[in-house]
Image (tube, rainbow, N blue to C red; front, top):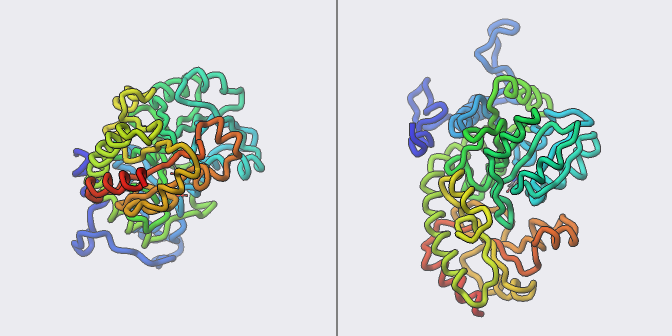
Length: 378
Ligand SMILES: *Cc1c(COP(=O)(O)O)cnc(C)c1O
């Protein structure tokens, strides 16, 4: 089944009991048992809910894995995956991971003894050098946020296998439509489904897919034990969003390429960060491991003041955290999504005060470019 067909026909199509072509929302917490322990596959909705299960089957199919899991947020998903490890275990991670991932590793999970080291995973030698005796996994985010750095998933997975480590990939930016880490050798792929998968800025959710029965069993145990599950309404909203994921990603891709061309040629715009640019340091890897470069672009406008002037004038790009929705969004990472990262570390990573990040939506691209132009030239 090709991708666009899978988005519609993957998982469990409709409702086999009634013929309804949309999965019903099973707004239920518990299930009747015929006699003690005799039930129809569901006993309690933390353990399993038919609407959530339909979503979990769908994401499993989209990522070509063995089992899918839906959580109440991307952070709940990441935390559950980390609960596969024990106190004293160590994880090597991408240095510019999502701010919340950095925070949960360094301020929460460190307290229960899960250790982490952050390195630039776009260079394999950095990963190799960070591997310790107690290392259990490599956690990659690619592309990253907001500098769109790329890690070679296949190479990192091979390196992980040589050292007997799991490879975990945060695939939020590329989505299963453009990039399938399990096909490239990863063991676990996860998403903040709040972003492109939901796609309409109306649901907070996280999804995980694992590549083996063993990991499936272990993660289901954690999901059921810690309980950060996604509710049936939100599960349904994600399935609705996924139906148009392909159309949205294609539209975003087209718009983004036009916008990147405009930014690149504008004299008031400094460096433009986008994996689709040929001078991006990992352009070739991005091209070979993903079907598209995505809708995230960052550019340097020079200073915090210039960024504020741009924000004051911009009309169609909504100033907001988050990304990956039908509407275009704009943010200033240093003062928003990445404010929780200490200033010296931000500088180290290259997240300047004048760095502006846009998430390109599916509006008319001529309107978006005209809007950027008037705001930049204000
Ligand atoms: C937003 C995001 C997360 C966290 O997801 P939530 O749904 O906000 O909890 C994790 N990783 C990446 C790359 C994200 O963009």
